Length: 152
Image 1 (tube, rainbow, N blue to C red):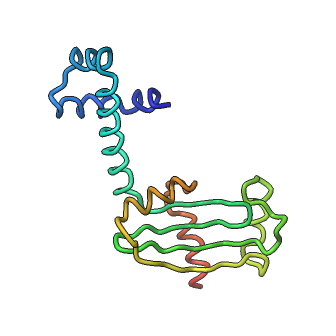
Image 2: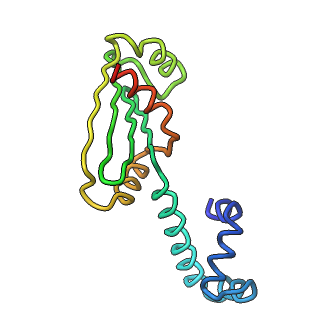
């Protein structure tokens, strides 16, 4: 998977190597003769890419069997909206479960809660931890739609 990602980020990786004063011939030599150094360079590049992605992240979403967690990732705090199916048989991880949610969103069968808290540490680390737990980056449209429902 690392190779596929690197292919997508090829221009960025070339620029990264250039900032390290490493040209193609030297990189090929490092890969062939010092694989541990090549791995370290890839790790540094990966960290830089993640830092940029997380810094630009505005919203995350996490779907579980009976809950949907929507996050608005502000600078100092993270706000959340949690949707919960009152029927434990509903599974938001399936197409039918999502269809049920869209049909029942305005009924008492779906609980909606809004909350928020300040980051306990660094913002990007908190977001990365949510992603490691299964959250995905989002454009925030679902969060905004649900927020408008809650506020009306």
